Length: 318
Image 1 (cartoon, rainbow, N blue to C red):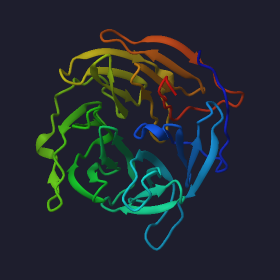
Image 2 (cartoon, one colour):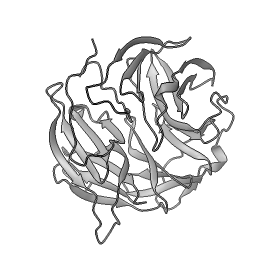
Image 3 (cartoon, rainbow, N blue to C red):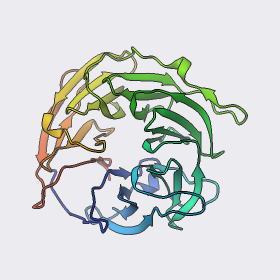
């Protein structure tokens, strides 16, 4: 069922650090974004398997931002300054600022300023399209109101390495350098006050499954159960029940370890889990309510083998 359909070589010639499908807006789920070097590319996957390039953004220095290499991206709902039927992508990396790009204009339409260090991760959620979370290299976490284009909550978590929003957009999950996953509740946004998240951090909600740095966290609601999945730098994948904190399954895949920048995996609402490995193949598993996930297949690499840095799953219906 799963097979390689197309290979796209991007003109920057460097690693693609993240790929993201627009899962926030129903009629924009055909849009796929990538970031690598100083570029963000947006493709149209309307005709499945074609991936036609529709926009290319270069993160060059301007009077407002320093530019530089991009490391992360997240689809967000259109901000106020663009047309209602536009699509917006948040990108960041070496530049501590978060740039919001309009697809129709292929330019930065808003800038979120608040970090002082390179941004490692961005997270958005379909259940609350006003919300964006960001994490920088120094462990500063900011929650942003996209309607107001300003921060409304923040925390300093020294050893934080990854973030993800819950499927309900009511909690934030934080992965750490020591292999633990923390949880905190997301407060309501207020225009006049930036709240601290540190008082609501639950450091012991999930057991220490890894002991190694967390590279990526994903959440999904599968068969009516909210799940949290964490990937360690050493290639371990652990699954917890988001509500009880009970560990429900795990995968050991040492060859999925990739040095350098973080790697990302994905979990779909249909219960599929996919990640890439050093040799260029992709493994796909079926997540169960209890027990270790079942391996479905391995998608072999193309002729030119290279580590898979990021994997994303579209809905099975698209």
